[in-house]
Length: 317
Image: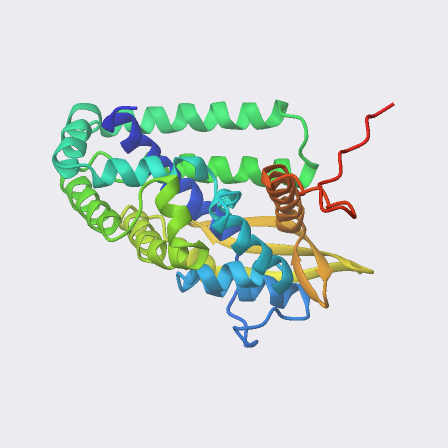
C-alpha cells in the first residue's frame, strides 16, 4: 500500500473511530472510576468518562467483567486478540496507519499528497462530501441486518458528517501541514507498528502508548470543527427499560451542532452492566482464542504401562 493510500486510511480511521466513540458516551459519572457501576446509565457514563480522559485501559476495564478482562489480556499475550482495538471502526487499519506516519520523511510525503489532491479544492471537497453522504444514506436504507433504530441513527450520523465535511476547512494547506506534523509526532511516540510489537508490548502497555495518539487525533478533528470531547460532554442518558439482566438506554448528544439520538442495549453480568454488543464480541473472541490455544497444545504423552513402557493406543474400530 502506498503512503498516499495509507495516509487516507489514517485520516479515515481517526475520523470514524473518534466519532463512534462519541456514540457510546454519556456525561461524567460520580461513581468509583475503578469499578463498573451497578446501574445501566451510570455504566455508560463511566465508560464515556474514561474515553474523554483518553484512559483506554480504564475504558477496557469497565467494558467487560474482571474475569473476562484477565482472559483477554492472556489472549493478547498469546497472539489471539487485539481487543479493544478490534472494537474500533477500521481497527485493522491502525497498524498500517502508524507505519505510514512513522516512515522516514512521512511529513513531507503526506504534505505532497495533500497538495496534489486537496489543497485549495474547497468546492471539490464540498461536492465529494455531499456525494458520499448521499451514497451512504442510500446504502444504509437498503442494507439488511439493522434494527429500525440503528438504521435511523446511522443515517443521521452520515448526514451529520457529510454536512460537517462540506463546511470544514479540509482543503486548507496550512491547517493540513499542522495536522500532519501533529499526527507524525504522536505516531513516533508509539513503540510499535506491527502485530509482533503489539503482542510483545501487552494489552495494557499498548493501550497506554496509544492514548496520547488518540488524544492528538481528537485535537486534530477539533481543529477542523469536529469537537469529539464536546460531543462526549453533551450526551445525556435515559433508562428506557429493565427486564431481568437486560436493559435499554437512550443516549442523546450533540455532534457538529446537530442533536443525535441512539438506543443502546446493555446486559448485566457479575452484578454490573456492560454493553451487550461488547459482551457478545468478546465472548466470541475468547471462544476462538480457547480453540486456537487447544489446537496448538502438544498431544498428551501416553501413560507408561506397569513394565515401564509407554502404552500403545488401541486401534480404532
